[in-house]
Length: 297
Image 1 (cartoon, rainbow, N blue to C red):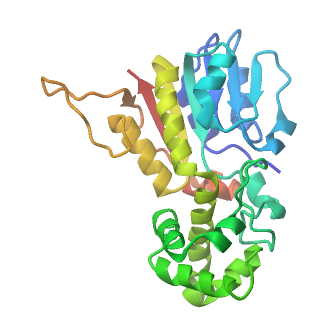
Image 2 (tube, rainbow, N blue to C red):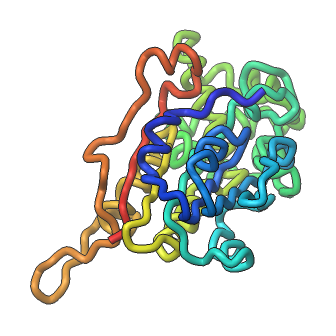
């Protein structure tokens, strides 16, 4: 089941849609955002991306709509292919969809005992089980520290390696059991969420893919075009925030000879927009959402 799209009204408002414009939804999922965008188009176009095969079941039957079953890191190539190199707005709702979390066999959730998969694209080759069972202890430390922001990342990596030396870790429960001594019970849910996040980011190369998409979005947007991005954890949000502020991912604003900042975007949201209590109650996934909106200069 695909839940209601997060921050829907705010996203649509942020896109500042014109009826004959070209728009892109790089994270189609259940199509919730896309269906609202297309309602506001006359002879405009909407091109959506989703690498998950499940998303194809939700396609919109409309001649103005195109669904591309590929990763959004190929944004510019496919926009060129569909004669839409320049667009008026790009929307990204990052992370894992509720649908993906709710299907046990995808292995994204700590709630189910399932294969350690975590691939957003079923055509990808590397799974979370491959990482858990083949990465060196140092490599595991790196992803747990950098992508999970786990403080005792060394304990977790050591526990995983010790356990896999006895038995291969193939399922979510086996991973949870192998790291059980690394956390007190009252911190279990938070730390397991961080562990699963770290593995998921590594499996799908999420941060590098996001960087690639943002850089391509800068080229694809026309002046005055809008970039609308929802992120769900600090690693994503920091990249988006820095990119909007400075055009790079370090957040360092370069200046011209006269000391004027060289920037590509004007931030429309001084602080990120966040969902209200009512939306969080209706859709738990929304609880950590942060929406940033920027306009191409």
